[in-house]
Image (tube, rainbow, N blue to C red):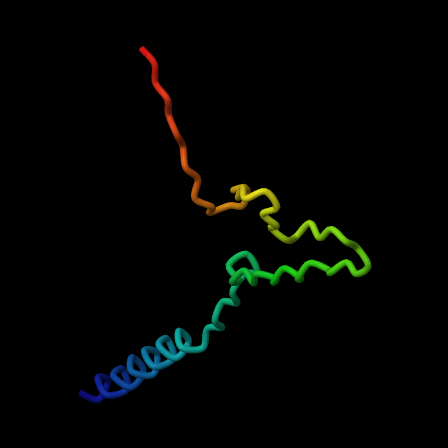
Length: 82
């Protein structure tokens, strides 16, 4: 019994040191590749002053609407002849 007590203390101390070493690891820093991507807002188009025609406007001069932007709805008319 005399040898068992120091052996028990030695094993307990070794286990405490081993488990304490696991808790002291440094956390890994996140790499730049995994950083969230920040979208830069598009600057508003510069307004041109002193001009008669503004290309950014959609003027329907002749009653015809031109669908030219992404997301516009178009109508397709099919005339079939057999």
